[in-house]
Image 1 (cartoon, rainbow, N blue to C red):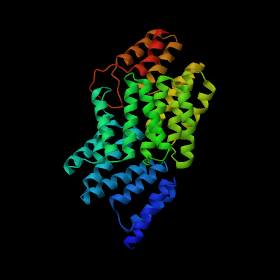
Image 2: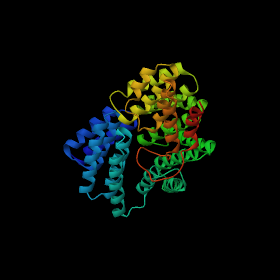
Image 3: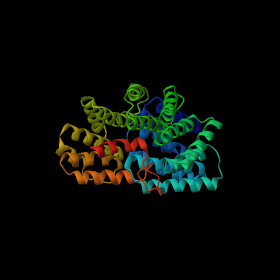
Image 4: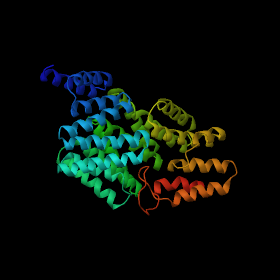
Length: 367
């Protein structure tokens, strides 16, 4: 096959991906890879697999891309593959140790490459997600935002802007933070952002923070927009993750019938994939079941969830409903005294739990 034909297949794969045609994109990249295996083609295959919900296939292709980029002497490309593998291992499986390993590998390769470009901004952003909610986190987010704007990389710019918005919400500047998330989502809907991981992450970030601060109206408006984007871009994982957090918000607002619809659909769509996200859904379904008085179902959903921070409230509510008041109080006090972890990995910090997270726990502690 000529180099022109290979280029045409790669271009076809990229075009199909941006149209939301994951199957067409994967076929194009697989055909090209029959002739030549290189990092760029494997990266295209990995992204197409992710769009199709084939997360294991996406990880495998990213690992092959990592090896190919290294063999080609492209340290920046290898660092990018390592960074995305870090993100996938955390978000798909919740494996924070594996996430740390790949992130460290990417950072080391980027340092050897001596590259201060866009990938350095992405590394700043990834490291920010590991930092406690304090000045160190905001500093890294602002550094990533500056690189994205200076190098005209909209994907990085709005990923960092959304991260900064979340950090502001979690440190008490709620309206200012939500406005930054609004801006990031507007950029996505306008087509300025192309990276599927950024699209998913920013939408989910908005719903997480709306749930934290009980902003039902804002969530409803963006939920309609999220559904439209799912149809246009075929971004499957935006829907159920948004539904999970939206369902949690509706539960807290007392709109249980609507919450049931959202959470049940999210659980169905996550039956075969996204292990880490399933816990997000089950915890919120359990909270709804406790409020409905369906305690045995709630207990079944919460089995094995003791170490998940979001499970503290429904676990305590379940104990309270069973008359186990001392145990409920102990669960809540231990969670309230724990540091505000930004992700499911250990972070050395004495920072108190953030106010938006503490509010529902304190309310139940009063009960």
